[in-house]
Length: 470
View (cartoon, rainbow, N blue to C red):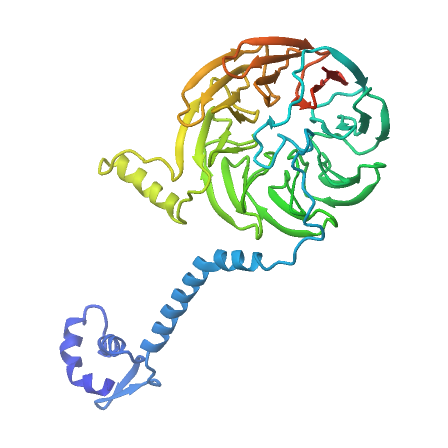
């Protein structure tokens, strides 16, 4: 077929004479357009060609292969989600750290991390029952169940105390600084350490059942649900482990440190990262379903109520977003293009991200987690201001100014709101209007959140003392 174009070479040669001295260039152009390989020479009016190969078939095969890879990449998450449903079940699906019968067996009390004690018991009046001195500061919040209280200190000691009088059951030493609050599920206490290990410790005697090492310190507090323990690490991963054996089921990367603790609603985990994203992660497979981006780190633990996720960040904004609504894979690409068009004056301002409900600007970075109850969200900022916001609109209802920074997260028990600050003070407020009922002065700054159980409140201070009040 290329020979049919030899007759046209004189015309094309004259047109291309400035670029080529032979008609081969012009002939090659025609041959290539018709899907054949190149000509090599012309001898005595005869066209000499290399092996004639149809060039259109490889191009179409390449295009089809690229389309197939694009479809496979788009559906890889759905395949992982489907496979996650078929994973072998954990060894003991009954293990759970959710508080029961007035106990407080995990950070923030429940899987939604609302900071609410549903069975507060007799109202606490602030009378001291006992104190226990560890000799080292405590920034980890205690957990309580039955007649036992578990608490760790910054010199690597873990204690099990009797709740009725503060006497010692047992003490475990040499663990390294303890920053993470433990979680109790069944007979095992799950504890993250600054050296990057997650330990499962037998509550009865303090012996280690199993341990798992991550790549960096663990400041996140574990969550145990249906036999699986979920915990974040400074290495940027959220881990899912078999609660009975410690075998890893999956791990999901983020782009920063995970100091936030995971919250759970149905089959979705919600966790923040220092990369400024709030991750929506399928609990069965570890597949991220959606990420809600913010400008700065999210170190707080999200709280979930009324179908919304509440969280604050170091950008001073406190946000309420829909727990179920998620954006598409390309939403941030379209937002980038929209912002460019806005700069050029051909598009309006950026719309809010999918699922956005409301936001509130605090007066300082937010490092404490929120409590949610009574149709309000209770938010503590680093400046010492506690704000009560309407659950559905974010409208401020009332505020309270503590004497120093608020790192401890507020806790609700009935209509009493417990707020601990760095001025050594535990303030107890009326949850409806913010009036102060009573206050307690500890021996040092209070970083750990207070714990309320069975008509008593436990306060761990940085001077190394834990106080029981009734």
